[in-house]
Length: 472
Ligand code: SAM
Image 1: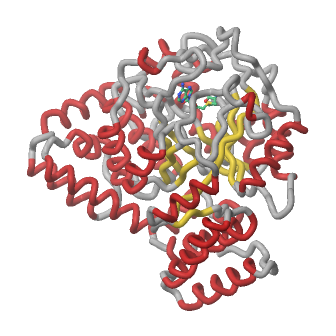
Image 2: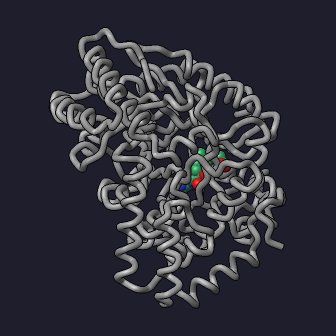
């Protein structure tokens, strides 16, 4: 039976409830009165239930669809302004004991070279990332208790935070590793991680078990209940996601939002981020073998409807998507993107390795400088800020900042100052020129006089080399 407060996977992601929601949305997708009711509720910017959001996703009335996209864009502007936070993935190890059929790291793949970074190699990768201008990483690893135990992950985190090359520093390490125990989550929290990210892959239990035929990841309940254990271990920023293409997107969409409702009901805080990866070609993986792939139109609608359903949750899009796709969907609610990513182990220092051990093909191959310039050219303010996490504004404290629409007085000036650091230390002359002009315009947008003055003073100090890393 459906119970968002239950700690049992099959009760908070209840198959019958998903099926009933699919039926309701299908029956009402042309029902103007019902769609208008849900849209009116959405305009209050307090979110929607999974069932209501699914109705908007399914909505078949063209003028209402235009309204849905416009509302998503407006909600994004209201809560996040024009900031886009940048990060890069860092692959630590591709040793893996699981059998995920969509991932080239699956244990039966005998021809992919296996590689695990030593601490010296982690340091070299971090220096390469710092030299591009990155301040925020998401570490990635296969699941292998012998080769990649939690102690190895903790050592890597320590190494990453310890490297200070030139003006560089990694100030936030997010972690995307397999579901683990409360005790291990506590250790990750103590190591100072930002968000714990775990993609559900699919919420459909039967499909999940088929797609994960062997290894510890086969256990649907253990995987689905991981975010509860992470929160029990003290991690209050968790990042959810599904791998679109594995199952029917409508099912995944409803269940993903049910997961968000569950976290809110039990822990008082929903997911910090939601990611929207789609299956990509990789070593022995052919995406066309999965028959639930979604086209760009559906992809854009999913992003818009997630934005409307959970206005306070950040949304991430990776370099799995091309520049053109990212440019199309970013307006509908994306708040974080990766840039200049390598999905191979050691790929930042040994580019020749990059294809050999890659987890998936990267569609957006631009440098970080190019991505930053592009964001500014299409009206965004690239941000390298990590202040919330460092100031202890995680979980519900971050959410209240977002809910009170204080982002323009806090995150916005922080974005301006961190972009200034990037421009001074790492940008090409062309990016610098566009960037410094943008900084002036963005400073003028800060509503509170005092905040604007302080931010402007720090921008000047960063430019003349006397700045510290002051943040609001
Ligand atoms: N091994 C960990 C786990 O099981 O959660 C870490 C995750 S893995 C390094 C990162 C994510 O990449 C996976 O959760 C999966 O969704 C995604 N992924 C795997 N194969 C992929 C493919 N062929 N195309 C796109 N994304 C893929």
